[in-house]
Length: 575
Image: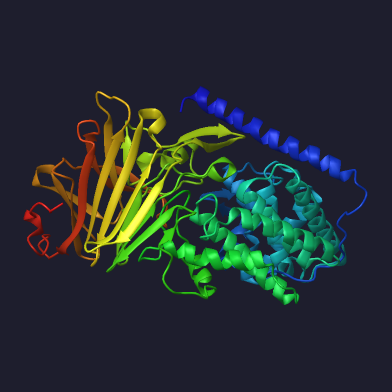
């Protein structure tokens, strides 16, 4: 991106944020003229349980002036963290969300309590909440839930003056979020805000009437955003994890007060749990679709402890647009739905018909994953079709991204996605098509997958049906490899061997077409982004509208670096 383009993008983002803020302020100003219904609270009755994992050693880092959030670290050198320039916008969102209070509470020391109280006291007394990022509804919602959850840390041993100031601040923050909800809060942020104000109505005294209103609004939004199969409108598995980590404590807190949780909350939890298992590979990680990055194993373990129905995961999520094939020790997860639109597409990818493949605890074929904290160029690159294991036409994505209200959203893409699946003698068969390339090339992409009954092979076919005349149309089938996979070409590039750390060896070929190994990137590693490789098959979709390919487990590696079954001289695989 050129300097001019970057400056223009930043200016448009600023205009978008200003437009949202202005609309919200207009609604808020109108509401403030209404003399009734202002939030009045004098006591905090409950502190919700924070299910997010805490690390007590982080409390020591914060006391020493090291604030590490969103992949960046700020060293204050003795200055106030509120006065030092933030290393990134994502860092500021995490800092002003105050989720890091859980680490201070886990430390359970007098120093940690005093340090946490001092930082919160500075935030309140010096009006740090006026910071532009601190005022964002999603950030303010996270801060409200953090203040409520970790109020025992802040209030234990505190004087009456701090207690009253804290209650007033929480009340004012709840009121502000209520005003924001009357304005321009969209998408997942709206769910976060509604959960936060509902928590406040449960935990503060004298909020019974507000609680009924907030519960009704939260129920309506859950009914709208959580699909019948348990997926979210954004199609982002990560957001489901975030939402469950809020809804489960909400259900518990209501029960602790002797109140019955709304049916919509219970139903949303019961639908989301099995849906989340659809994405799970043998190593416990979730498939990388539409904003999913690193799978937090600690949080997944926490959610598993609350999962009452630990049977088979759902295999066909028709409303969310995902499918799962499972045979032997192999798992295939496929993106089988159109991309979301509007506010729900802020993190969505152009990966329709992309798939991931794993064998036992080893992921083999993956997508690149999501970059939430990197530069704009990297975020957009990893959302493109080329960053997914599917077919790309003319190096273009099957969806178009546009800057809307400060965020890059999907403004056009596949709308007609058709899916069918059946069990056959050969194994589980899945076939789907999408029209994401219809507008640009008059093309429809159809992909067929067959996972054998023993899970030892995955056969695929990709067809490009053209309704317009083309002299040629470059097509590229990409298969991104997990960083632990070691590929090598065989038969003068007409196939490839994939060596797994487990000792398994898989072979790949594609209708006699040349296979290339190119560089790729993997953004879902626990230690950050890692270089990896991809198998690439390039062809002309006009002269060869259909290609077939196959992955097959052919043996286990031997000490000589060859595979059992003479893999080094592997014969062509029958397609």
